Figure (spheres, one colour):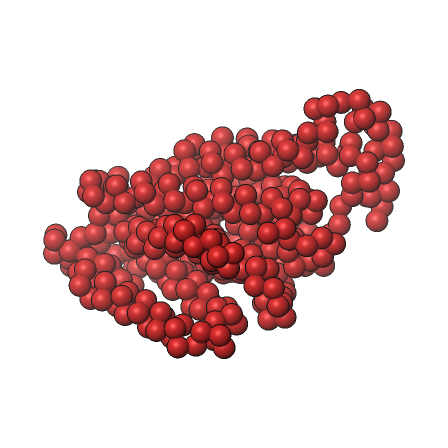
Length: 443
């Protein structure tokens, strides 16, 4: 590869600098620390600060590539879809009628993709860092779950109108929790839980496989707590995504438990399903919130989304080749030309429709090609592997990505940096485990 030949030339030229610098030899540790800090600060700070830490990670990766002897880039076949997506995004930005706004959205996308490349590159040499990364994510989501539970007991006030109460008794209105993620929004917290619950669930299974029963029980309890707080967010899209995650986890677990512990497995699953059904049957606010999914136009939130979908689809139809350009600010300016009176929106409330509107149908195809190839290869890996621990570690990012894609069908909080950093990290972990076979995962 031409780029690796160029890198080798630069590395030979800078070798004396690297060999005489103690700090540069710690670059890997600095990259690892910045990755973990990106997750930690995302639960406290705003988008700009999260972006700064992601940029630090990317900058340190560039330093490593330029200075470390024999370092090189390797592009997997499925990543060619991501490259195509990025090139098409560039074209859409160049052709945008609101270039200055579109550039802002483009730089965010650039940061996310650079963060993905940085994590992939780091994990290529340090697979043993996958577990600490997952533990850090699990710690962050556990913190948010505890905060959310406290907000539920405190019955926090809504910051804005988050649910249609016209056909609901005041006693049946759920207290929607929102955690500490900025901007404070229960749908954002619900989306965050969708991406991170697989880490808690997977770590519980991992420590169970190691017969570390106390740690497995702790993570199992945190999984149940987070699932409960997810329901308290009132985010109906995350309800659907969690259902798909649990169904997918059930299907994967059949490979491990069906032939060894068939009766116990059926008993446990039946008890879990029964407990969930009883919870919704007994707790009226949750049942009302869940059933509002099927209210269609009778629910104002549903009706609002249908109107936005209709307008956004027309936007995509009129700009199907290269889109309107990147970013929600760009979207909002042009959406005003299409929107139905009284139904202003910041986004398309569907990540696939949003991608088509912003960057065109070909960019959407490229992005879906990236995800579809990654998911299919992960499923093949799970089907063929005989190592339980490898199966667990591959299942965690797979479930996270699937959950995000399902939730993204009815919301666009997916584009918030708190979720993007988790999502691209999960893609990087999955890519490392199923494509980088030079070294085994250290358990």
